[in-house]
Image (cartoon, rainbow, N blue to C red; front, side, top):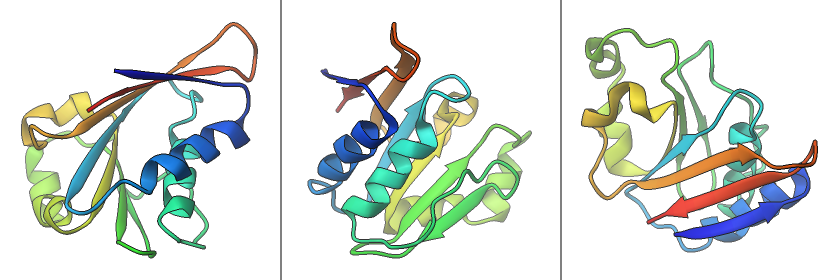
Length: 137
Protein backbone atom coordinates (compact mmCIF):
# COMPACT_ATOMS: atom_id res chain seq x y z
CA UNK A 1 0.00 0.00 0.00
CA UNK A 2 1.16 3.51 -0.84
CA UNK A 3 0.16 6.42 1.38
CA UNK A 4 0.32 10.09 0.41
CA UNK A 5 -0.45 13.05 2.64
CA UNK A 6 -2.03 15.91 0.71
CA UNK A 7 -2.21 19.39 2.20
CA UNK A 8 -4.51 20.88 -0.44
CA UNK A 9 -6.84 20.16 -3.32
CA UNK A 10 -4.01 21.13 -5.67
CA UNK A 11 -1.70 18.52 -4.12
CA UNK A 12 -4.42 15.87 -4.40
CA UNK A 13 -4.90 16.72 -8.08
CA UNK A 14 -1.13 16.70 -8.72
CA UNK A 15 -0.75 13.30 -7.03
CA UNK A 16 -3.60 11.89 -9.14
CA UNK A 17 -2.20 13.41 -12.36
CA UNK A 18 1.14 11.75 -11.70
CA UNK A 19 -0.61 8.46 -10.82
CA UNK A 20 -2.50 8.60 -14.13
CA UNK A 21 0.75 8.46 -16.11
CA UNK A 22 1.10 4.76 -15.29
CA UNK A 23 -2.43 3.77 -16.29
CA UNK A 24 -3.44 1.93 -19.43
CA UNK A 25 -6.91 0.60 -20.26
CA UNK A 26 -8.75 -1.32 -19.22
CA UNK A 27 -8.30 -0.26 -15.61
CA UNK A 28 -10.81 0.32 -12.84
CA UNK A 29 -10.13 2.61 -9.91
CA UNK A 30 -12.40 2.39 -6.86
CA UNK A 31 -12.54 5.67 -4.94
CA UNK A 32 -13.76 5.53 -1.37
CA UNK A 33 -14.16 8.33 1.13
CA UNK A 34 -16.70 10.40 2.95
CA UNK A 35 -18.56 13.24 1.27
CA UNK A 36 -16.10 16.07 0.63
CA UNK A 37 -13.02 13.88 1.11
CA UNK A 38 -11.69 14.70 -2.37
CA UNK A 39 -12.94 11.97 -4.70
CA UNK A 40 -13.87 14.46 -7.43
CA UNK A 41 -10.60 16.38 -6.95
CA UNK A 42 -8.72 13.11 -7.36
CA UNK A 43 -10.67 12.36 -10.54
CA UNK A 44 -9.96 15.88 -11.84
CA UNK A 45 -6.24 15.15 -11.40
CA UNK A 46 -6.55 11.79 -13.18
CA UNK A 47 -8.28 13.50 -16.10
CA UNK A 48 -5.51 16.11 -16.33
CA UNK A 49 -2.86 13.38 -16.14
CA UNK A 50 -4.56 11.61 -19.05
CA UNK A 51 -4.47 14.81 -21.11
CA UNK A 52 -8.10 15.84 -20.74
CA UNK A 53 -9.04 19.50 -20.77
CA UNK A 54 -12.68 18.71 -19.94
CA UNK A 55 -14.34 20.22 -16.88
CA UNK A 56 -14.60 17.48 -14.25
CA UNK A 57 -17.57 17.42 -11.89
CA UNK A 58 -19.26 14.87 -9.68
CA UNK A 59 -21.64 12.55 -11.55
CA UNK A 60 -23.94 12.22 -8.52
CA UNK A 61 -27.15 12.93 -10.42
CA UNK A 62 -26.13 11.62 -13.86
CA UNK A 63 -24.46 8.33 -12.78
CA UNK A 64 -21.57 8.76 -15.24
CA UNK A 65 -19.47 11.44 -16.92
CA UNK A 66 -17.05 10.75 -19.75
CA UNK A 67 -13.85 12.73 -20.27
CA UNK A 68 -11.69 12.62 -23.38
CA UNK A 69 -7.91 12.42 -23.25
CA UNK A 70 -5.17 9.94 -24.06
CA UNK A 71 -7.67 7.27 -23.01
CA UNK A 72 -11.39 7.64 -22.31
CA UNK A 73 -12.06 8.25 -18.62
CA UNK A 74 -15.42 7.12 -17.27
CA UNK A 75 -16.38 8.61 -13.91
CA UNK A 76 -19.19 6.75 -12.13
CA UNK A 77 -21.04 7.55 -8.93
CA UNK A 78 -22.91 4.49 -7.65
CA UNK A 79 -24.40 6.20 -4.59
CA UNK A 80 -27.91 6.55 -6.01
CA UNK A 81 -28.00 3.22 -7.89
CA UNK A 82 -30.49 0.84 -6.30
CA UNK A 83 -30.17 -2.33 -8.38
CA UNK A 84 -27.59 -4.03 -10.61
CA UNK A 85 -30.00 -3.86 -13.55
CA UNK A 86 -29.57 -0.08 -13.64
CA UNK A 87 -25.87 -0.58 -14.32
CA UNK A 88 -26.50 -3.23 -16.96
CA UNK A 89 -28.95 -0.86 -18.68
CA UNK A 90 -26.23 1.78 -19.19
CA UNK A 91 -23.60 -0.70 -20.42
CA UNK A 92 -21.49 -0.52 -17.25
CA UNK A 93 -19.43 -3.64 -18.05
CA UNK A 94 -18.54 -2.33 -21.52
CA UNK A 95 -17.24 0.95 -20.09
CA UNK A 96 -15.05 -0.98 -17.63
CA UNK A 97 -13.63 -3.06 -20.48
CA UNK A 98 -12.60 -0.20 -22.78
CA UNK A 99 -11.15 2.67 -20.79
CA UNK A 100 -10.09 3.96 -17.41
CA UNK A 101 -13.07 3.78 -15.05
CA UNK A 102 -13.29 5.66 -11.76
CA UNK A 103 -15.98 4.34 -9.45
CA UNK A 104 -17.19 6.40 -6.49
CA UNK A 105 -19.04 4.43 -3.80
CA UNK A 106 -17.73 1.08 -5.15
CA UNK A 107 -18.87 -0.94 -2.13
CA UNK A 108 -22.47 -0.67 -3.29
CA UNK A 109 -21.76 -3.10 -6.18
CA UNK A 110 -18.35 -4.60 -5.39
CA UNK A 111 -19.28 -7.94 -7.03
CA UNK A 112 -19.55 -6.25 -10.45
CA UNK A 113 -16.03 -4.78 -10.32
CA UNK A 114 -12.88 -6.42 -11.68
CA UNK A 115 -10.72 -8.29 -9.17
CA UNK A 116 -7.68 -6.26 -10.23
CA UNK A 117 -9.33 -2.91 -9.50
CA UNK A 118 -7.14 -0.37 -7.76
CA UNK A 119 -8.57 0.73 -4.40
CA UNK A 120 -7.97 4.34 -3.39
CA UNK A 121 -9.25 5.65 -0.09
CA UNK A 122 -9.32 9.33 0.83
CA UNK A 123 -9.74 10.29 4.48
CA UNK A 124 -9.61 13.54 6.37
CA UNK A 125 -6.34 14.44 8.05
CA UNK A 126 -5.79 16.60 11.12
CA UNK A 127 -5.87 19.91 9.23
CA UNK A 128 -8.97 21.21 7.42
CA UNK A 129 -7.40 20.78 3.95
CA UNK A 130 -5.32 17.69 4.75
CA UNK A 131 -6.21 14.37 3.14
CA UNK A 132 -4.66 10.94 3.55
CA UNK A 133 -4.64 9.07 0.23
CA UNK A 134 -4.11 5.31 0.45
CA UNK A 135 -3.55 3.35 -2.76
CA UNK A 136 -3.88 -0.44 -2.87
CA UNK A 137 -2.88 -2.04 -6.16
